[in-house]
Amino acid sequence: MVRKSGGTPRREASLSRERIVDASIKLLDASGEAGLTFRALSERLATGPGAIYWHVADKIDLMTAACDAIVERTMADIVPGTDPRGAIRAVALGIFDAMAAHPWIGSALTMAPGQLPAVRILERLGQSVVALGVPEERQWATVSALLSYILGVGGQNAANMQFARAKDIHRQAFLAEVAATWSALDADAFPFTRAIAERMSTHDDREDFLTGIDLILAGITSP
Image 1 (cartoon, helix red, strand yellow):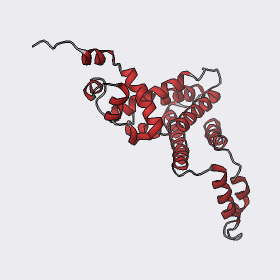
Image 2 (cartoon, one colour; image 1 turned 90 degrees about the vertical axis):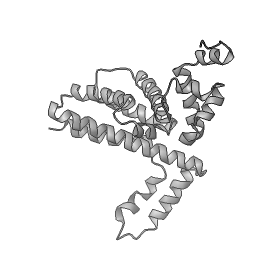
Image 3 (tube, helix red, strand yellow; image 1 turned 60 degrees about the vertical axis):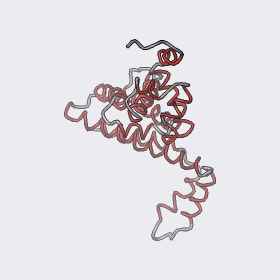
Image 4 (cartoon, one colour; image 1 turned 45 degrees about the vertical axis):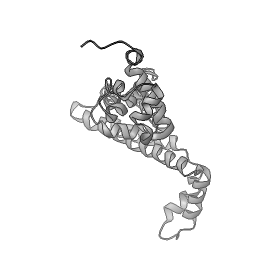
């Protein structure tokens, strides 16, 4: 039997994977992972779930595609340079900022280990590690350490920001409270913590993140 043409087939024909991914990103940014449902996506796209399933297999596939779109755009915005250290710092900071803007990326990367979003980051880091002259037998461990740091610290920072927004916690007030608590600790038992307490209220998460990258780079290039 030949399927009759009508309004619904025309809407489905105009639906593309790119439109679905863009709409998914908007839902994820607005409501987080829990807000991305096929029902909500269908309503946003004015189509039926069946049309969406034609382009994506399930929610994990959908989140992976949305994550890959963000990572691909982030990598495209990084201008290739001749300095491999600068390239690594640019990739790291780009992913850190992308995670801050889209906190669900960390979860999406966890759901899809070894798939394209992580591979894009891996490839850019790997090319720079090779350019630094790291011996072949150490290249995987070096890239793995960088990737673990970037995704781990970037993901934790994004999770902290998401938690603060959900609980209506203001960063400066929270850090000031932590600083006051640390300053009141026993001086003999916690000398270091007390010493850095004052800096806690003014520290910059982005700068701290880059300091960690620089420490790893110093280790990579040391004799």
